[in-house]
Length: 578
Ligand SMILES: Nc1ncnc2c1ncn2[C@@H]1O[C@H](COP(=O)(O)OP(=O)(O)OP(=O)(O)O)[C@@H](O)[C@H]1O
Image (tube, rainbow, N blue to C red):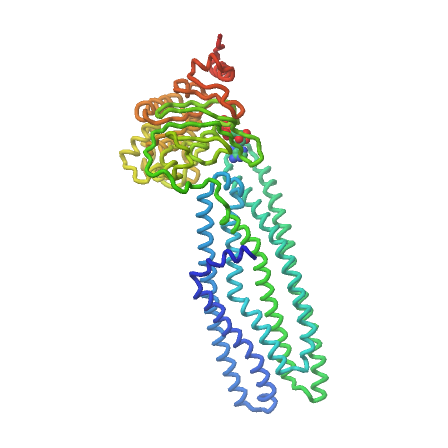
């Protein structure tokens, strides 16, 4: 309920539509309520007295009320839909905006599957709830109250039937709505699982095929799909059982109405038309209660969705901007870690422990160590993809948390281990690094990254279109393009996280050469599992189990680091004798 309230301000820009919708619906309902009354008069006053002029007159009145009702109904649909659809679009936009500003920790906490369900299913669910509220919520109670009042004035003899039927119908609606709300929360969680599975499968489709694991994946998908089916069936069954039970109660009311009515007609205290009108009103009451119950169920369902949406909107972004960021700092590129500890989860074990080192501006820092030792994590802290749990990271002697995120990240070129390119042209992808890059700059950056040689061979060169996930490029080409995107920024700090793993030795040498010549003032961090990639670094950090086991130049490390000696010996085939 609180969450729904929180979303209410999103209706504000569409207040007029939100008022017109129910207002026009009132017109439709009023007209519909008049119909049985007119019919009763046609039967009791027109047909019974053989007065054809009266019958025609009232017939025409029925037609006019129908047309007015139709106009009201159509108008209500148009305005209610407009209000609800725009309301949902604004929420969708804000949820997306928020997720774009999420820290990596925030995104990890939700998971992509859940975020997709929230932006799609959950937003649609609150849209549906609003649309039904504007369109039907007025209709149901109006039909209900209107019919009860009319029966009170026109068929009071049969009113006791309503006194019995209505409480039963209302209890049924309350019971089933509450039940369906709980079941719907379970349905949403199952949809999350289906979305997560789908996303993972599509992203890894090539691996699945290469390992011929389609059947296994189909089986896995079937599991989440079965859970969703079961939960959907339970939720739908609750809704579907309600209708026949309510219909049964109303039919009992009809039988009682006919029976009591027949006795009264025999006694001469009631006219036949009144019985017919009563039956009609009973059906209208059922109709009103049914549509109200549908809205209620949709609203209860939308509680879950609204909660999930508000959860995203209210998420505290743990990478915060400083209140007074250092203005217009010209970065030089000195990077210092002071006693940095970091863990991915609050109570988890530290992935980085007491990391301290100083990289002078313009130096090249090699980072080497075993798989999972914390190398990627270490460099992710520099652009503040994550913040340390304790200790500090300084650039040019100032804690990075004092720079605005925009300025800090602008000064860093990051080539991540897992290459991410977007569908669109190569040019668009390169410009991701620098929006206003000239053709000359793009060519220069591509040359530094040894990418120009393959770009020149492609159709349209820089205009060549990449498919989703850049599947029309080889692994090495993707890495080179990803480096081009980082180089074009001419960053003061460049991070290459295992970015040459798929590149041939000749191209790698050319990239190293370009780094030395064109980017000599840039502080470069090179993470690599190959000693050959970092052998010339000014400083090499040997990471072991989240700690710096040793640091220094290649020769120094051969003397003082057993881990480094081990890696070198394995790769070069040379035993290092001390
Ligand atoms: N997003 C994450 N959430 C939780 N744990 C993580 C996350 N990313 C990495 N880890 C864990 O942190 C540890 C260090 O991972 P990291 O990626 O920094 O290692 P690495 O040295 O770069 O490994 P590799 O050489 O294989 O790339 C690993 O134990 C890993 O399981």
